[in-house]
Length: 181
Image (cartoon, rainbow, N blue to C red; front, side, top):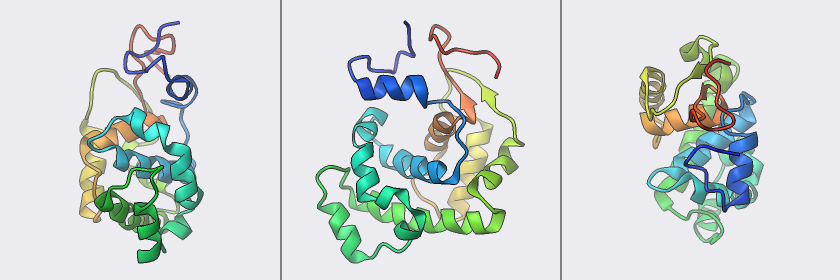
């Protein structure tokens, strides 16, 4: 069975992620928060690196409970920095807490983060391949940056939209390829 060329067939976690999660619409705010945090940790690294540490991130980040993450203090940040099972980048860890607070504010403003995102997507899903940004990711990135989020450039947001199912991007020779949803 052919898969997207980025999928490392030697890594069962990656194959599972490709086959069952990537590009599958999941608009639950808890999932949207988890993926935004993980995508921000990907900056400068491979998604496979982050994915391999995902379960450890879940444990370290209190199962991505936003109400806990927004209250992380210096002690918790130091605990994260000493956790060898996750990516221990001080800037990214600090930013993840700040981004969580902004995510929470967006939830309050729109009722959910999903409701915020659909103001950009107009409740439509895209099918496109061989891109790393588009007008949609540009607009969302620009707005999130204006709100104070960091590590949410257009490329990261495009990847986030692919991962969460707003953009369906399986390659043409992948068994999961579709032209339309």
